[in-house]
Amino acid sequence: MQTPSKTGQLRDLEGRQKLLLRLVELSVTLNSTLDLDELLQLITATATELLECEAASILLYDEKNPRLYFAAATGSDPAQLAGIPVPIDSSLAGTIFRTNQPLILNNADQDPRHYSLVSDHVKIKTHSLLGVPMPIKDRTMGVLEAINKREGGFTDSDAAILSVTAAHAAIAINNARLLKSTQQALEKVKVTNQIKSHFLSLASHELRTPLGIIIGYATFLQNGARGESAMDNANHVLGAAEQMRVLLDQMNNLTLLQSDEMEMRQMKIPIQDVLHFAIDEIKYTAARRDLQLVLAFREDPIFVSVDPEKTTLAFVNLLNNAIRFSPEGSEITIGAVAQEKQVLVWVEDRGIGIPVDKLQKIFEEFYQIEPPNTRHYGGLGIGLAIAKGLIEAQDGNIWAESAGEGQGSTFKVTLRITKE
Image (cartoon, rainbow, N blue to C red; front, side, top):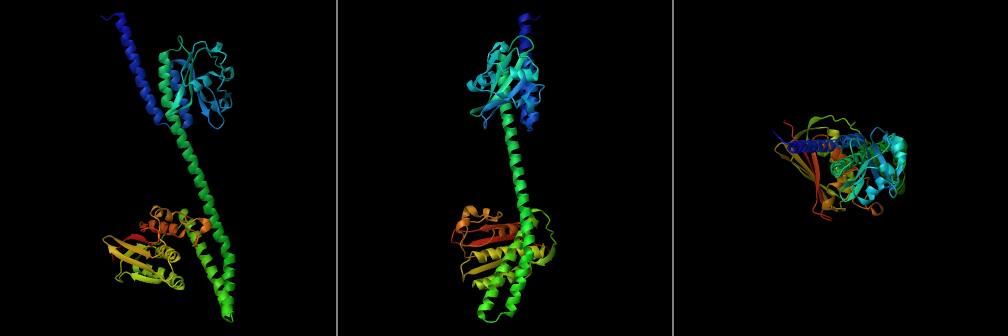
């Protein structure tokens, strides 16, 4: 037969085991809950259960407006409580926050630091109070309080239990805050991208009408020009207008890619045909800069299943990029070779090259290697982004290689080969 002392010890062990199990369950639950409001309510409910008290509350530190505020309390509206400022220098919670030490008061209503405004609001008269700091890394996030022990007063054992709860709660709240701030930042980026896409679409649409008029009159002047000077002037106007039309087409294509509204009409076609289409579009631009186009591919057809128009546009953008950054009189090589189940296509220039740390960034929208105020080369910085989008939309890959600045660059594309 067990003695009363042994029976009491067994009860204590069972109680501790139950408590430890409940703390483990709390830790798992807290780390799997990322909704901040739900998390705060869970913490207060668990604290009242573990300590067998009447209520619990969470006060968090506001870094922008240095003060404590109630984030949650048993049976209260957090939004209304948040409007009650809790002074750090003259309140019980403020004392716990400043000293970073637990505080037990089993006669809290007689302490001059007791903040009765909160008690009046939650309609709970405070008799006993236990408060502990909520540590996160090297700082204190706030204070977790338990109010009115149901039997007897709060003990050091209660303080240890609440401190463990507060430590887990601080980590969970910090994670939930990080998630919330990340979601808000992503939403802002999404809105900004929508505004940008809308502006690009609107601008490209609205500028087409006046641009069409300019091209029409420039063509009329070109046809009726007499004398070399008049012909040159008309050619300059027409060339500038055509360049602007290319930019508008790029803006429109970018907005279509961003909105996933661009339709791909795939068909089986030799990659050599696509490359010839692209070369035909840029050969006069290359000739004006005395650039030689070197074809490094055989005419034996290598069939791919792509949208010919969109794929041609991708290679036109790659070739225009090579033309823009190549010195006059140099060479641009366009090559293609079959490699098992895919074809490798490349555009190689002898131009200014690309720093190794920029080989990925050059495919970002509007990215320019040169500073905007000291640029020597034109363009909006969207041609490569469009090329990347068009190639990847057809399950292809695109990347850039360069030995560094002044060493030229090579843009490579792979597409799947289709059986003849």
